Amino acid sequence: MVKKNACVFISGQGSNLKNLIQRSRDVNFPINIKLIISDNKKAFGIIYAKKNSIPYSILNTKLRNYENKIFQILKKNKINFICLAGYMKIISKNFIKQFRKKIINIHPSLLPKFKGLNTFSRVLKNNEIKTGCTVHYVDEKLDNGPIINQKSFYINSDDNEVSLKLKTQKLEYQTFPEAIIKIFRNS
Ligand code: GRF
Image 1 (cartoon, rainbow, N blue to C red):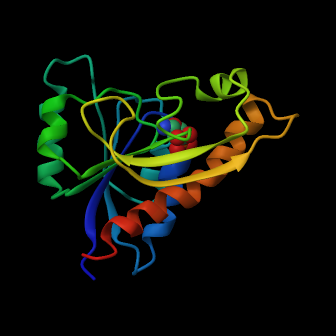
Image 2 (cartoon, rainbow, N blue to C red; image 1 turned 180 degrees about the vertical axis):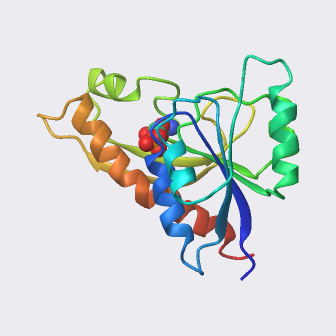
């Protein structure tokens, strides 16, 4: 199997990045993580790039042309697949056009429910019975593209924002790699 050269975009903790790096060590996993991009120089997840000797780039998103810079870095590293793992910056329509069906995102809710931020507090306020996470293709609208993989769990009466986050993230570590396997299963 020829693995795809993937780049993971992060902004914070990077626990999904850590998990994807681990999974990609398997020869049968469809991607190799060749590059990590962060829009935040303080993102804890950068440590996983360093620990695993994966090239990384920290962007200055205050610069008007920062997306051009991303293009150049992706091209230089021959990247043909992008995973957004807690990347908090909105990606431009133009960028998405260039990488159509090649960018995926993980979101901590059962999309199409609870797009956007603060999902756990909204899930609780809405008295949802279940919640979970979703991996989807990225399109021009926020948290909107076609769903690739979704997993859910039942909410307990004593759950709070912290416990929901923990449970959701645990589920994300299965859902994200599974989505990637699904995408490349028949290629
Ligand atoms: C995840 O919960 C993901 O669903 C959301 O941001 C969080 C990132 O967590 N998009 P981490 O940085 O992978 O630990």
